[in-house]
Structures are given as C-alpha cells and as structure tokens.
Image (cartoon, rainbow, N blue to C red):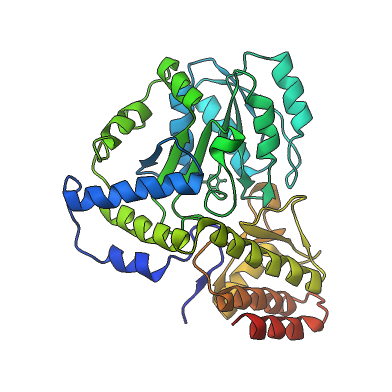
Length: 377
Ligand SMILES: *Cc1c(COP(=O)(O)O)cnc(C)c1O
C-alpha cells in the first residue's frame, strides 16, 4: 500500500511533476530549457512577492542559507541570531563556521524572541550587520513575527535575513512590502517538488552589501549567478530534470492563484487544529504557522515508537521531534500535494496510532472525522 508522506519536507509531489522527471534529459544551453528556466524564475518572484530577481541553487535549503551568509558578510562581522528551535541554531552554526561573531537572542522552543529585545540589541550594537531568523521554525511549528522584526531592521543599516524554507509558498510573506532583505526557500517544502533546489532573493540594499562583503565564495557567488541568469542560463550545469519538475509544481501552486493556494494550506491547518481539539491534544507552538502542525503527545507516549508504528500499521509517515523535542511531538505537514482524503487519512492514522499506543482518546473523534470526510470529499 502506498504511503502518504506527512513530513514537512519532503512532501508529496503532484503527478505533473513526477511525469516530467521521467522525460529524457535535455541540454541546459538550449532554447527549450531557457524557456522553462525563464518561467521558473518569474514564477518564483510571484511566490516571493518581490520585484527582485530570485536565484536558484543546485543545493538543498541549507545551501541557500549558506549562500546568503557568505555573500553578505565579511570575516568578524557581528550578526544577531534568533534561535528558538533546530533551524534557528543552524544560523548560529553557519555564522560560527564562517568566522562571524554571532550574538544570540534565543527563546524557548515553540516561542519567538521578542521584537522589543531585538530592537534594544540593535540600539546597543548598531554595528550588527544582519539579523538571522526563520519565518516558520519547522522544528517547533512556530511562526516568528517577521513583519515586526522587519519594522525594526528596515530603518537601520542592519539587514533582515529570513530562512523561509518551510514558509515560502505556504503563506503570505511579502518580501518587498515588509522590507525583508534576504528570503530563502526550498524545493521540497511548500514548492511541492523533490529536494535539491533552493532559492534566494535579495533586496536592493542587500545587493549593495553583497558588493562590499569579503567572505570567500565561488560556487555560491550570487552576483555571478545573477549575471548568468540575465542570459537565461544558470552559471553551471542546470539540474534540468529537477527544474522541469519545479516548473510543473509551480504551475500547480499558482494555477488557481497564489492566495487560493495559501487558503488551501490554511484550511488544512484548520482541520488539523480542530481535530486536535476533538482529541483533547495541544499544538506545541504559541503562534502556529500554517505550514505544519506540531502535536504535543500525551504523557507516557513515546513519539519515536508511535511514529514507527503509524508508518508500519497505517502507512502514514510523520516526522518526530528534533533536539530537545525528540520523542515528545509528531509533526504533520500541510504543504504538500494533498487531497482532502489524504489529510483526513493522516488525521485518522494519528488517532488510531495513539489509541493503539494506549492513549485515552474521547470516542467522538471517529464521528467528527467521518463528517469532515463527507463534507470535504
Ligand atoms: C527544511 C528546512 C531547512 C533545511 O533544508 P535542507 O533542504 O534540509 O537543507 C532549513 N530551515 C528550515 C526552516 C527548514 O524547514
């Protein structure tokens, strides 16, 4: 029986994208490819709601985080990292790896560092080059207050660099309107394509900073990539099959309109939130992002065993907790190519798995899910 990926990346890919993955490879310096690539770049600008060019890396999301970091900084630069989960910690690790000086303002997992504290730190240390944060912290499901952070950074010389790998494509994140200086996305998250591509857009002032920054870079030199893109090409061999798959996924994402797609993700999220209420369970984060639901497991339930059992017995693949949340949560994605039937199957598998693991659930959940299923399918 086919499994459903309920993991917040990789996610199920639409059949249109799977089909093109089986097509013969075309060369990347051909008119046929140029046409696909040009459409991909302009569709990506639509999703990122920006007039700035969006660049594509042949790398998973972390590669794009790294490219932003090395293109905008010089050795010894002070940066402010705002970790409140696994991916926030990655910014700190990257900054350290490249010899930057990270200041760290953390928050408990499931919460966000307070904008007022960010403002205070920037006042005290105006030399901070950039603030590094996630839009959706995928390890906890928290949506960080990007707009508030941007209101603090935009009147200063400090840049706001946002890892939106699980947010971009899932909900509104208007880069230009909010004055975000760098936005990072990833193909296997809300773009519903296989892993292996990531995206970067820089604001005008970030491009200015790019010219002055002196950290070494070669493969990830954004100015060189931009100049190749202006010829309709990527600088090095394009992963043509992945780009064609992304092209197909973007057509699905944008097909009914971007805001309709966001609505759909939001409705899936609402279904999950209501279902947890029916089950008497809670979400982990204070301010949950639409991209995924992070379910706090009842006391005495081992999350790792539960995840394995649900996969074996019900053919649904959840993702467990990372770091300090290991064994304590399950993560349920809303950002893939899902039918309502899929999301309801995922919901049912969660309840069945919990029941089989000995959790005490109110019996009303079966009827509730049945009525959802009748309404939506
Ligand atoms: C998935 C994810 C990453 C890591 O992306 P990779 O594609 O695994 O390199 C980084 N940040 C966030 C917020 C993510 O969700």
